[in-house]
Length: 394
Image (cartoon, rainbow, N blue to C red; front, side, top):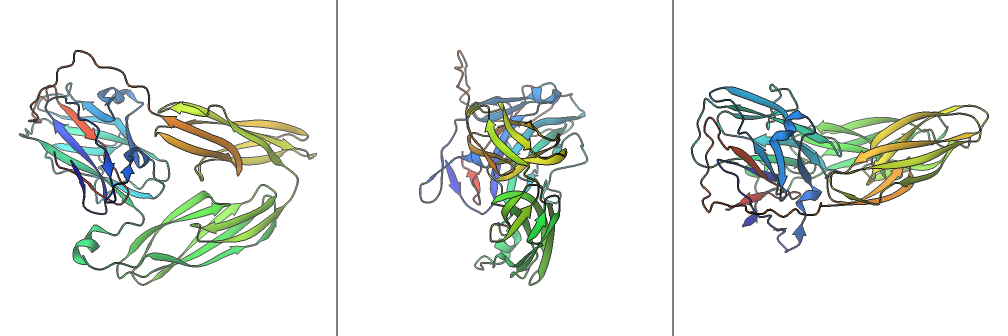
């Protein structure tokens, strides 16, 4: 059974001495509203060689460490990945009190993923995680550790403990300036936003630059308690037209761009329906009716956030098709666009389940991690929910 307790999103991970199938649990908010944890993050085996140690089964990822050396420190980089599916995620770290077990970023065993050295992902980032195990150390009983996901509007845990009844004021955007508001294609506009932190302690905030509602750039800043801080963006505008340019969707200015009639005549996606992990192609046709070749940068946006770019040269009097390849690892429906032109949407679903036959499961749930980790496995149960902690009560 699961319960909701504090403003931190967590994933509970169980180190077990045998492989179990743990049924997927339905998560609910206090009001009974169902929550789909896959909208927040997704765990998957790495595409590299060490991804062979990770297996997906019934929405759980199993890391099979049976082959690790006895009485040795063994590292395995790029074993599994954490894909961030929520745009507001600011920090990710792994809380681990288990002696002899460490998690690190990518292939660098020195880059531990801890609260003091968290990963700070951008929108749609995929985090690669490696595992280091010291099999000189034996563990008895069931061990747990936790992956924390912190959102940019979460209060600090320390503040919650020290000021339990205090509600901190939020960081607010005090002013916005956009200059110039009239320019030629190829020229740049400067955007400045000033934030105020009404709290007594320093706060971090991710400022998002938007063009017609699409997030095209971002910066994370720290603002001292009771102070203000200004963030500055520079943006080259390559396409003629009028645009609303702003920060965080809270304020914007109208900017008019004039120049040759270079345009994206159409945009589309090849597949409207995908299975999780599949790739599709998103295309756009750029038309150049002028007498000179032009260079343009096209931006692929998924759900209003730029995730990829392509720079191309279009010869005079011609048109050119530009394509993007994109893999979707999290189920859901996504709106796609290229440089502001609608390319349609894609719906990603779970693969059809495969029946498991003649599989015997032990009724015992006692678990241990001990050298040489014979039949050892890590079972990662995903339970993510924005701004709530999911606490296991098995």
